[in-house]
Image 1: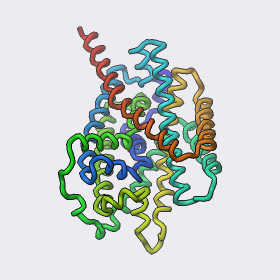
Image 2: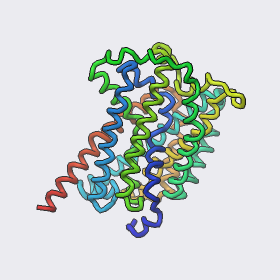
Image 3: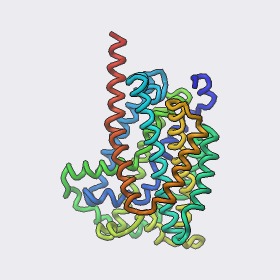
Length: 364
């Protein structure tokens, strides 16, 4: 697609804040605390700023990579740096990566619905309804996805954020002490487990050309990373002060469980409200991942986006019907976490180094 035609679908720079937020805050916000505790106990909150700072560096690298290559995306950069065949192979792998990430989010959200709302209900009917909704959003183009990200984030701001302020009288600050009883290695391992929550930030490599004046959007991208890091840190601290470490290890979906214990005059089951409101933002995150996969399939595999979208959603349905073991779903989630870790901390820096060498070579 030529740059002139891309400009018709470009979005305002400030929307990058909502696009990144929607991709970084997913279902993991409901249970990331359990993974954090495994390595560093209640000192794990110190790991979140470490991960957040590294994400700022990754965002800076992405902007340097794309801007130095004429405001293009990762699919064209791969073919430019690695040649036609290796570049296409890398692009095909990236297509699978984004599609796989979208599926993991899709399946984990279905698990929450089944656990809290409809324990006896088959997943197939609601999966089909969500798949139809996803097809409608993604087929509408990138501007539609940016719009749903905006409204999804806005709804979570209005309906979910205030819930963190409820129950402050039940917090115990002494749970956070002693402040330093774990090693630096344990804190780094905890920071590594936190990377899973930020996966989705790499979609910026795909939709970068769809941003009007991308250079102006960089401040919004860093603002989003800072806000998300602060949100994760506050949520983790509140959870740590609400539960003892022993209690937290036994609780399923700690954020929802804490909300479920709260009672309001008009809402006796607040977790139902949270799950329902999060649907908009979760759908936005999945749609963004699907669009990135379909965009890559169009550029590298010469496959029309509606066709690739239907194929991916069909695979979603097949896997959901035939794969129901929680252990296998956990295995897929762990694999996605490992792939995402190397994508962010190995592949992106590699592109950055190649970009700097290429730029130095041209200048000399």
